[in-house]
Length: 337
Image 1 (cartoon, helix red, strand yellow):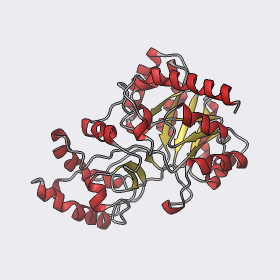
Image 2: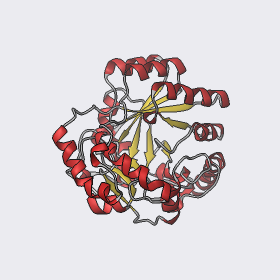
Image 3: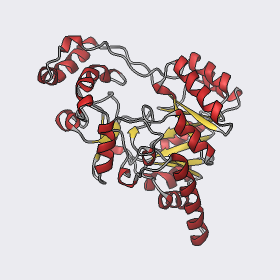
């Protein structure tokens, strides 16, 4: 969970017996090394290091200007100069420099979002003795990942928070829910399947195993833990979120992602044809967020969260990890699933 997961959360989850995952799209290479140094100083347990592997779009000045024009009323409302918005910037996809960090630190698992990197880089990751996993939002994507070298597939249901992992199709109307997706992927591939989306407690873990998953990935349920790093308006939104509080929107980054509805989503989205391609849409929002967030406003913050946000609770990440595992094992033993 880029922007929310900290090295401290990674350590807490791994020390508790889970697989802590460091979202590396949020870091520059020096920052990533510093974060990994922090993790390695505090745990020797296996960790996962996660990367985006999108293709960088060619900047389209006309589209970027049109996007700024859509945002101009908000700039005027806040007394900001729309021409002073920073140039388009965004997340760096997995490249040779980041691959060198994987080779240096040798995490047990390296995971990818938006497909897989080029074969030459993937071979280097495998040579560093890392297991390779990646997100699939359809059966076709799962089969593609298996055919192209993934050691396990994350079956990412539509309920999941944050950016959708889709890479073979941009059609959000055809995205599949976790309960329908997991068994179909489990039937279609030979590699292990990791269920993700809407899983926030032991009940969800047991349900995922019943559907054929070999493991689960949990995200939103950790956002209220003391190890998470999210702004106060995001915390407030999470604490009051209900089952219908989230939508899939592209207005924050240019790529569909699930988050809690706020003013920007209501007025420009949830899915806008005007938003520049990922990750270029976010730069023009930065001044709006900087002007409003310190006053407690969530109007221009990407409030990433899954549909099970209501189940999140404020407890240490390690405590929750151990409790979920213990409770799930007890339920599995009782029900003999």
